[in-house]
Amino acid sequence: MQQENEPQINSENTPSFQKKVWITTGIFAFTIIILLVFKATFSVFLLVLAGTLIAIFFRGLSNFIQRKTKWKEGVCVAISIITTLLILAGLFWLIGAKVQEQIAELMETLPKTIDNAKAQLNDSSIGEKIVDKISSNKSMNKAQVFAGQFFQSTFGVFGDIYVILFIGIFFTISPQTYTKGVVQLIPVKGQKKAGQMLDKLGEQLRN
Image (cartoon, rainbow, N blue to C red; front, side):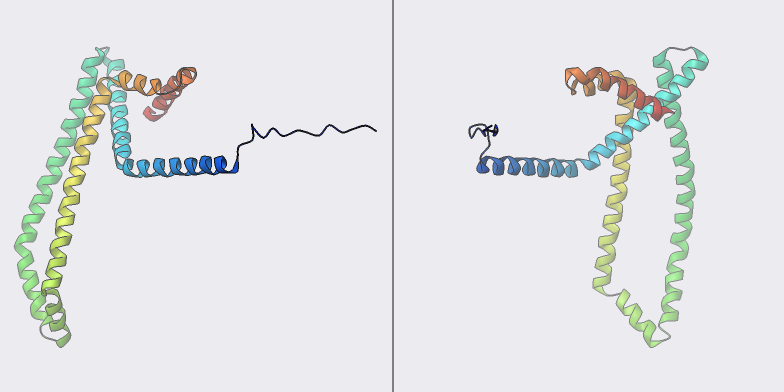
């Protein structure tokens, strides 16, 4: 009779159940750690991304100036950064002056408006309850907490803008340094392809 060759399982090469459990647990724990790190650094990642986009804009503008004027690269980069910042400062100054004027007018008319509203509400029993509710200590505390959170978030936005401009200017001045640093994080076999991909990505973003 012809005997069928049955595959033999080598028990030494087959991972045990306990080893499989440890491998699965390790993969799960590593995934959780990566997600937690990503969550903790997500805002930083967004700031770096925004700074990169700002740097691409500065570089694109400097390349345009260099093509038109044939000036040195450093001069064109300086012109692109300084000109953009001056334009932004002028816009903020114009908008800020208009907003300041409107706030001054609002501060003059707001007390009278509040007094008139209170007088009209006090004419009815429901209006009196509304005024008492608004004037209560609990409502005032909530308003103070909201105002504090609003100004805190506002100053946070200005801080983020400063960080974005700071990162953008550094990336603009020496983009090759950071590009080579990113490429060096890739294994040697894929560094050439990674460099080509970054160049292509930068070209598409500039467009």
